[in-house]
Image 1 (cartoon, helix red, strand yellow):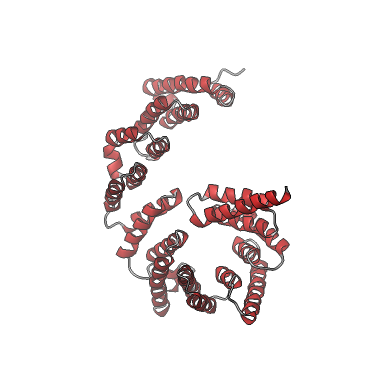
Image 2 (cartoon, one colour):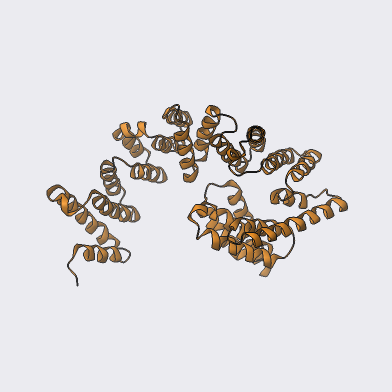
Length: 416
């Protein structure tokens, strides 16, 4: 029964799901009133509160499909948020999803000054041009974004990181390439860009290019070691990165049907890092492996699992060895119950560590493989779907989700 403004807003917020039409209109009235209060008595409210209530109106208008009103409200909101690109980004992305390309053009013209000064907004507009089917204009727009912050290597890395987090991976690669091109070989910012770029290339299947990027990274890391600058290697071991380099080469040769070259590169990778789970998994799955090779790989898997167990004992709060053990066993052989328990433990740890939160999608991917290995296709699909939801642009995760769904469909068909 409280008449306080905060209580009234809470009641309106709770009413929304039950009466969305009314909520959308009421939030409009609240936003107008709060905006007027800011003009007349600025000590009684704040700009952030005004934008917050406008955002509530936008939310309900979009859910109701009242597009013209939603666009008008988002335009108003974007005009208020001079120091933020959030609403403009959302508006352009939403209009693209709605295929309202004429409105995209209108937004681009109205906010041209702000868009041309913000690389993330320019990249969002480049995506919109791509969606319109205008690849030439998309490239031109992305080139303008790449030219901003010229000479500021750190800023370009920040933009690349933001693009990668948003799933705009194609443009992120351009920013990372620029950082690498401008950077000193072996410098931390160069190395982290090389690591990121190589994994992006691997994810989309360009393994030869990924290997080339890591080859340059390894040379820089080796130079750091020779000069006594190991700290510049960001805690990465040269042999582990070299193993990844050989693994990418192996993936490339496998795609070309070069079985001998594929096996040779995998063995080179394992010689560099006997704990590289992806390499052991690839060797385990070799159809052409001799009995001796198979037994050697099984021994390597057992040794790696034992080492991961030792790491867990030494550092029980570190999520990495739990995930590594689960990933290796679920994709090869061993104690599948232990793999599932380790995977669940890695997720428990990663969810309580804000620093590692970015790893959650990958850890869910591992958990899905654990369920798949046990024949629980229902949970495998559910878990992999969550992983893809967190990282929707990962080609590898989407590919696995399709495989798990296929297995689930087949199992249901077999039961009929």
